[in-house]
Length: 180
Image 1 (cartoon, rainbow, N blue to C red):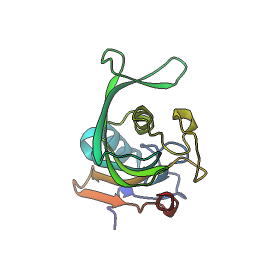
Image 2: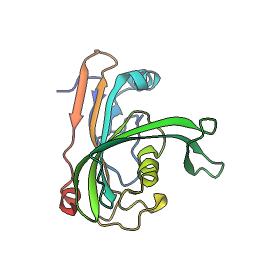
Image 3: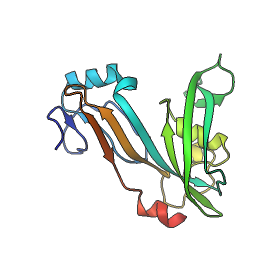
Image 4: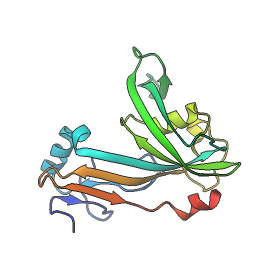
């Protein structure tokens, strides 16, 4: 059972949300049961969150078994996110990926965010030439599952009250697996 200060999943309780998923992304989400715990987690987010891993269904056949994408991400005045190689224009974003399975049309990747910038995985996959399926905003030409092909599969953190390491995993959706 989870310690009393954290809900791991709850859609029915009105609790403070302090970490977000992009619209149409499935998977794990964390809610704080109190504003105090929310504040503790937000204050030390980078230290407390030890793993955020996603599974991405991307367009095309990825041939590299693994890799890393580094760029600098910034938001324009029009509130659109952009990626650049210029360190003076944005904040460093690092995404690691590992190929799980691929076919000619789609690939399934495990995506780990070393940094947590808005739309980071979506921008980086587009930059790599393999937009996330269903992501028209970042270059996808298909929507085979009727939504964004992104799933928050692992969330691990240090509980801010007990100090205990917590790890939660969610299975890869069957729709993702059927595409490859």
